[in-house]
Length: 218
Image (cartoon, rainbow, N blue to C red):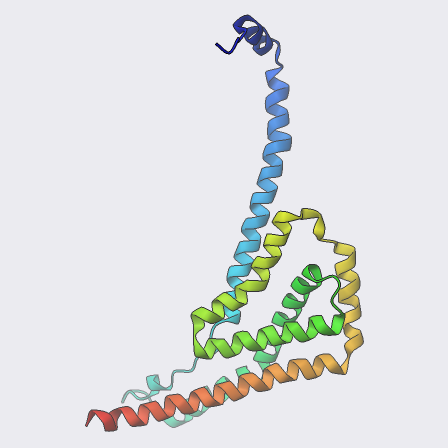
C-alpha cells in the first residue's frame, strides 16, 4: 500500500556503519543529554536548598524548656547562655545570610533583566529577600513559593532561549555593583532591622500565647 521497497531497506541497513553510529550517539547525543540533565539536577538542588533556607521562619532555634528538668543544674545560667547565643546568631550570623541571599538574587536578576539598572536590581533583590522573610512569619508555604519564583523563572528563560545567558555581561554587572557603595549598606541594613523587628514581635506573640492559654483552660 505504501510502496515500501524491502530489498532497498535491507541493503541500506547492511551498509550502515554501526560502530560509528553507536560511537557518535554516545559521544554526542548522550553526552549532551547527560550534561543538560546533570545541570538541571544541580540547579534544582540549589533552588531547593536556597528557598528552604530563605523561607524558613526559625533560622536559629532556642529551646529553653530543656533546662526546666529537675536534674539540670544551673538552669538560669544555661538559659542565659542559650538566650545570649540565640541573640548573637541573629545579630552576627544573620547579616551574612542576608548578604548571601542578596548576592544570589542579584545574580539571577542580572541574568534575567539585562536592561534594568544596577540600583534597581539591588533594590528588587533586597525587597524580594525582605518579602520572603515577612511571609515566612505569616505562612511558610507562601514564603517557599515566593522564594522559588525568581530561580524557576530563570530556569524557564534558559529552556526557551539557551543563548540568553552571557557570562561576560554578568561579570561586568557584578563588578559595578560596588559602585552603589552606601546604598547597598542601607538596603542590607533595612532587611536586617526588619528581621529583628519581626523576631521581636513573634517572640512577644509566643510569650503572650503561653500566658493566655493556661488562663483559658482554667
